[in-house]
Image (cartoon, rainbow, N blue to C red; front, side):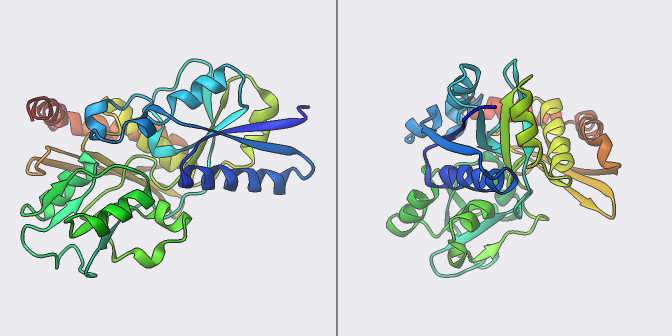
Length: 312
C-alpha cells in the first residue's frame, strides 16, 4: 500500500476545487490514507490569446496530466469530463465518472436580461463553437465574441469589456460559489451541453489495482452511463470538444435517454435526434444515435464546419 496518493490537477481555481473535492471524498471512504494534490499547467492554460478551436483540442487541457500519470509522477488525474478526449492514451482508463452537477449552460448578463430579452445585436462572450452555433440558431442577430481564461477572468472581462452577456457552464459557477452571478439557466431546448459537462472524471493507469479500487468508490451509477453514451456519440462522429456538437444523457425511470445535436457554425443547418434504452447499453446507444445522424447528413455538416472554420 502506498504511503501517499498523488492527485494530478490543473492549477486553475476550479480545477483545484475539483481535485480537492475528489480528495475529500476519498478521505471519507478511506480514513487514514494520505493524499497530496500536484498542480500543473497544461497547453490550454498557457495559450490564452487564441480561440480554443484554432489551437486544436486533442488533450488541450489533459495531455500534461496524462504524461505525468504515465510517468508515475501522480497516481490519478482529475479532469473536467468535458475536457477529456474520447480516445485516451494507451495505458490509461477512466477510473471514475463522478456525480454530475446540473450539466447545462447559463447566461450571465450585465443588466440581468435573459437570452430572449437581450437587445438586437447584443455582444455575447464565449469561446465555444457549440454554444455559438446553438445560440445563433435561436438568436441569429447576436454578435459572438471570443473570450478565454478561467471563470474569474471571464467574469472580469464581462465587466470590463463591451459585452452584454457571457455564457458558461453552470457546474463551474456553482462549484466556485458564484451562483448569484447567474441570470438564466439556458434551456436544453435551446442549447445542449458539451459531452461530459458537469461531471468530474478520474483518470488512472490501466492495471493499477490499488488505485482502481480507490477510484471505484467515486463512480456514480447514473453519471457513468450518461457520460459513456455521450462520449460514444462524439467518438463515432469523430468530433472533438471544439466542434458544434452537443449531447445530453439522462437516466429517467431506469432508462437512459440521449439527445444529440450537430450544427453548422451559423446554426442554420441543424440535426437534433434522440434515442433511449437500457443504461447498460450506453456505448451502443451513443454509437447508434451518431449512426442515425450520420445517415441524415451529420458528416456533411461537420465537413462544412471544418471548411468554414479553416477559411474564416
